Length: 234
Image (tube, rainbow, N blue to C red; front, side, top):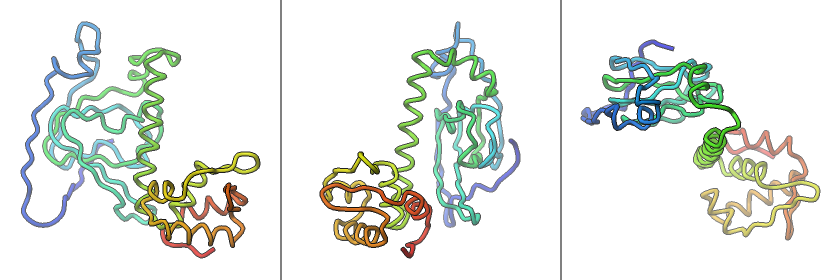
């Protein structure tokens, strides 16, 4: 869970970024605690400290009270595929409440104050699984996952974008997809002619059937295409 990392933001002159610390009396988490006695433990970490690693099972929830944290995601070949900065006031990877593996490695860019709570204690603090708050939290996490998936899709090949979209939204059997061509192209950040070309290739390969309604014929093939980093041969 700990360690050191050089959270490089690129070459050139350094950029000075100042963030005010979140005061306990103003913190969303602190206010939510009974009698404002926060159950989270605050620890100060130096620049380069790694809060958690990509792929690791979460041990605790982390709220950034002061400083900046760099989130880094690498692909299967070890290349950086995505990076993002998180300022003070951020709950780092909120899906920790599900116990799923970390998607990113989180490293301090500056000296940071982090308020943490072990996963077991977090579950007890959140309350019963059937509570309205838990239900709303789960819906928010699902929506955040969809938004992240849609954003990541724009960085893949045209075929992979279309395949991933069809896996999610197109049906087979009695559940065909009926969406305007222009709308789908816009959702995938593709030109309409590019979408038409990809759909034609998928149809000719008997992965889908087209017409007024679109149906998936080969979900296994479509799934493989959705995972391709580069433009795949059909």
